[in-house]
Each structure stands twice: as structure tokens, then as C-alpha cells.
Length: 102
Image 1 (tube, rainbow, N blue to C red):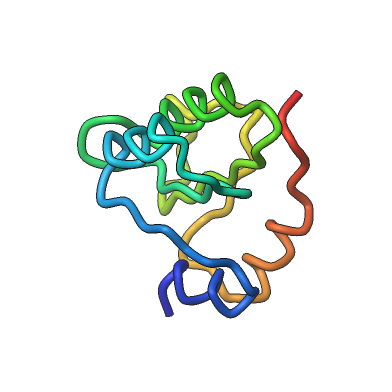
Image 2 (cartoon, rainbow, N blue to C red):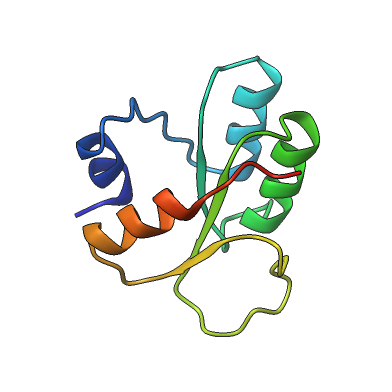
């Protein structure tokens, strides 16, 4: 089950972006959103870099970084992280623990 489907089941209206650059374009276009869930490894901009951009522009937006890799090289240690593969209940717990960046 995809992350977008899981978030939809939690009641979120999900906006998917195919890259970090596309997500930044949505951000700069003032697309409203309450939560950012991003993969760490993406073409071009990493999820960590995207999270930094979002936190700079919208500091109260909670961010969750998803990664299938055990190593944390290049990952901001302050970012909440969920390791793939994960189940819906694990995503729910991670989402519930998110707090706005300060």
C-alpha cells in the first residue's frame, strides 16, 4: 500500500509530487499543506534538502522523512525519520509524534 493511500486513509487530501523540485514549485506557488512526507532519495533534490527548504519557508509545517536505507549520511539528525518498509500503523505512530519545527 502506498504512503499516499495510507495518508488518504487518515483523512489527508494528498498532493503528490514526482520530485523534490516539483514539491518546491508547489511550495513556492503557495499550495496549502499541513504535513510533508518525503522520501530521502529522490532524483535531483534530496528529501533532506526539500525538508530544509520547507522548514525555512513554512517553519510550523511538520516533516517526516522516509528512507529505505539504514545509513544516515546526508540526513538531518533533527528530522523525524521512518524506515521503509513500514506498515500503516507505524506511519500513524510517526505522524502522531510529529511536532512543528522550531
